[in-house]
Structures are given as structure tokens and as C-alpha cells.
Length: 274
Image 1 (tube, rainbow, N blue to C red):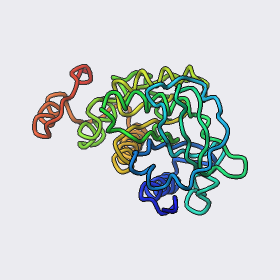
Image 2 (tube, one colour):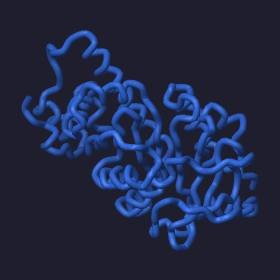
Image 3 (cartoon, one colour):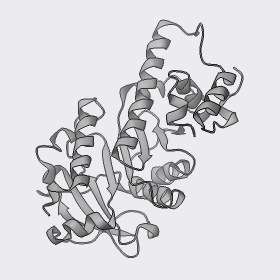
Image 4 (cartoon, rainbow, N blue to C red):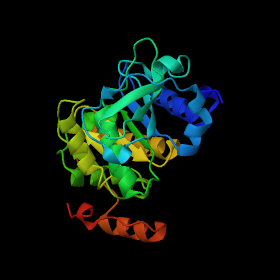
């Protein structure tokens, strides 16, 4: 099978394009990775042309031998659907979990996203916690989420509660809440470690003054989670632009009733009295 005909490749490219259209990926901003299923690898492996092994910059032993579709460093999401072999690629993780090699794509001198350590460490955490169900890690620069990191305390409790209040679906879509990483230099192991710690608790993590990370089972769920958080942030930004004090909102007991009816568990630490 031609790699571009594979369903997971089509889904990957569609998600990249959707993010561009919604404004999450200015210039070369953002990155997307997908942990490919063994059955999907078998369908396309005849197309692989392995390159040289390169250092990841961290160690991900539980991803040894796995294959990932990735976006490229310095490549633009807006080109994913018209130049996929240049904008995206497939990499293999070495047996010791410290190196990767490109086996397809990223032509014309490309390399995987500079956030590869963060992505792979997050994949490793989610693979363990979900028994392999989670396969997508997505990072983008949604304007309203970023704006809120300049005015709200950089605390999970505050961000979670404020965004939950913005739309009734929010506590159902992200019942575990939202983690927050204070500003750090992106691209290295330090921020990757801090993000992966929070991914043990949450499916979505904010990087202050930078962007948002989301994890999920497939492209639809992961993109939907990311989009819902940004939509809630947009509503909150509009609310704060009109008034510093809400006249009415969803209250803690309302959330508890919602959780019962929708069969989700909402941590009590987010249902504090204001």
C-alpha cells in the first residue's frame, strides 16, 4: 500500500489541516505525533527507507521499536495536505529507547518536531496508563488559552474551574481537569519531564505563554478535546472583557449533579467555594 493511501495517514493530515484552519498553527507553530499500530505498520513497511540513527534527547524505553508519524521541525501545518512527504514523516524508535531514525518522509533535509522529547515522553506515560489505548499527542498555539495564562493564576485548580464554568460540556469532555506548566524554554528534556508528570494526571496540559498539549485515543477525540478547551477559553476571554465579576455561573452542586447524570467523576479539589 502507498503510505499516503493509509487511513491513519489521511487522518493525520486532516487533523493537521483542521488545526491550521482554526488558527492553532501560525507559521511553523505546533506539532502532532501518532503512535502507529502494528497492523498499520505492516501495511506500509515495504515503503520504508531507514535513515541514520539520531539522538532523541531523552530515554523512552517503553516505546522501543515503535513507529510514529510526526510533523517536521520548521515545517508548516498549512502544507501538510499539499506536501505531506515534506511536512510529515514516520520515525522508528531504537531498541534502547534513546534514538530515532526517519523511515519515510521529511524529505529535503527535514527532521522531526523539536518537541520530540516531550511528545515521546508523553506517549510513554499515556501508553502505560491506558494499556496502549492512547496514540495521539497534539500541541498547538490557541490564542485564547495563551491569553489566559497572562491573567489567571498558573494553577490547575483555577484553570480547570474557570474553563469548566464556560460550557456545560467541559467537565464531561475533560473531567480530570487541566494541568499547567509555568513558562519554560521549549524543546528540551526539562519541559518534557514536567509535562509528562502532569500527563499522569491529565489529558490536557497548558504551557504558560506558549500553548496547549492534548492526548487521546484517536485523532477525533484528541482534536475535539483541544478544540473544546480553546472554545471554553474564548468564552472566558469574552466574559472577562465585559465584566470582572460574573452575574451567574455553574455552581459546585450543579457540577456534582452533572457528574452523576453523565457518569463522570469530578475531583472535589476543583469544586471549591469561591
